Image 1: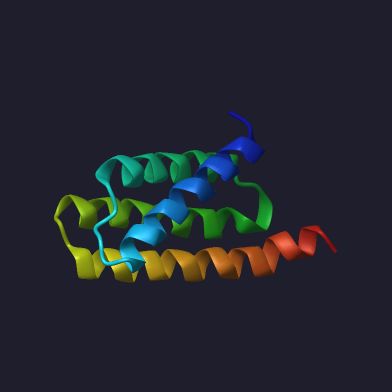
Image 2: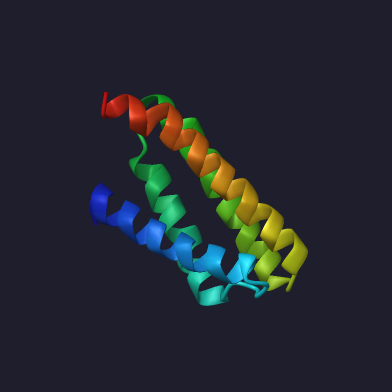
Length: 100
């Protein structure tokens, strides 16, 4: 699997997770498990300055999986919010620079 398709699959899973979490539902374990695996694959593909950001994102994805397994709705929402902040920061710092 290449970088672009991994990123696209990661984004799709994250959008589903956010819709559930912000809609008051615990994200499905199947989707969160896929998201955690994709985050790990994304980390393996990371290069240069954003490796640390990918590492943090992957760690948060693992924490989300753990919270969902425990049925921790409040914790899950907090982690999804942290993931969204991490994603926004990374895109602002690295993606936007790459397209400049």
